[in-house]
Image (cartoon, rainbow, N blue to C red):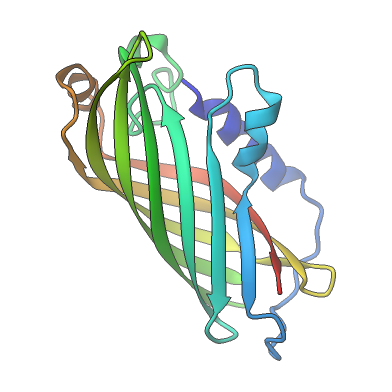
Amino acid sequence: MNRSPGLLAAAILLVATPLQAQEIDQTMSRRHFLGSSAFVVMNFVLTDPPDFYQLNYGYWLTSRDAVSVEAITWKYDAPLGIPYGPSFDSPDEDYAGYVRAHGIGAAYQRLIWRNLYSAVHALPLRQQFFDESDVKIQDGFQLFLTFRLGYHIKLRRDRFFLEPSLAFTHWPINTNVPASFAEQDRKWPNYFLFEPGLHLGVKF
């Protein structure tokens, strides 16, 4: 599976980042922002890259509320609902192939206390299912929801930012899944708890 190296790297970054957090500038001189996820770096440092890419554009409606649009693609080769534990990285849980997902979603973020924030993301995904010979079997659809709790850290006078977080993800809709993939999925829940994240970006 390709998920654990990215998760481990994000967890290390969360612990190792010695930065001082400050409150968001109330003057709101920079309302727009572009961002991504630190997981993208894993594409360039791992021998088996996760093929995860993300680009966000957002806008601060007020000093506490932001909305954003996010374009995301990733590839995975085992059920997303496998929890941390002995099965998390087990080859026995892998699909007979892999899934490539693409989507454009929306997010709403709210500062709930100082720079502590909560966010909700809704991401509709087109899913392409491939067999072990890299031949596409069929297409499907997934609605991927994320509920996030994190901290907004501003850098260089609020020009740049980092956002370490923990997330609860849930995919209530998952259609047209090949039978062999669905058989693996049925072993596990359609949610994942405590996924670490590290978003970064620039405001303008």
